[in-house]
Length: 297
Image 1 (cartoon, one colour):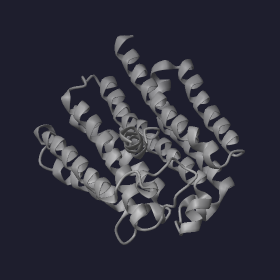
Image 2 (cartoon, helix red, strand yellow):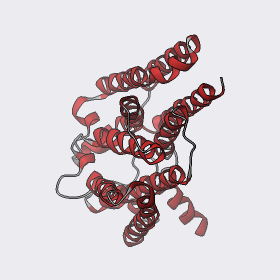
Image 3 (cartoon, helix red, strand yellow):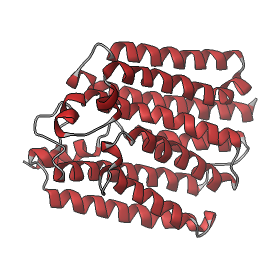
Image 4 (cartoon, helix red, strand yellow):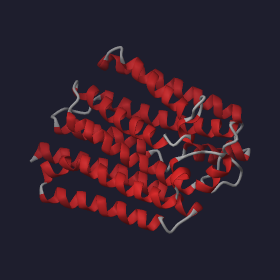
């Protein structure tokens, strides 16, 4: 019984999607290293804060979707512990609250580097966790989930982490933050693409429900292409010819992944959640390695 509950909590964390949090902060690390700065404690605090907030968002999504009747037993996606009765709604609600409190307590240390306005940033992130699944107009049910991902898993973590490490913001970093955010949005594209029948049945109006299968795979391709365009200077400036190979490979992977997913349905798409998130982390790690090369050679 304990093993079953443990598995339910791990599934509620949605580990396949957690690399999305790591990628944004890694991207900021890359640009900070290229600018000649070291990765101090604020960077690692940002990493932990991002992971905790994403986990809390996943918990909140499970709790509020259950309360609103937007989840049903036997869904195509990963098992939902609250809906299936493995986790009590109260336990999920408490876990969400505790995780956000711990994340905010950790985030308060960033005031030492960034100033008191860090409180406003933290409040905005917590509000985003709530607004995604709850409130009078949940973003996830009105086709704005992908936009929220670009903002809270791209623009915010990349720009904020870079600022805390360097004390500045640059145009290149802002462009990169949008690029990483678009790759993160693709994780949600896959999730909602898989869940079209389940979401349509309970009245969730995601982009996938609104547009259908074919357009969502084109959104996936376009997101990869636009992300590559926004990130390519980070590779080509340092690596030259090899930078073109990397960016070409990114576009090819996005097109190939969409072609494969176009032929899949339901649970067959679950592995592509992880693959899309891992692709995002690989891109961020390549940026870090490129930045290190720029300092060494």
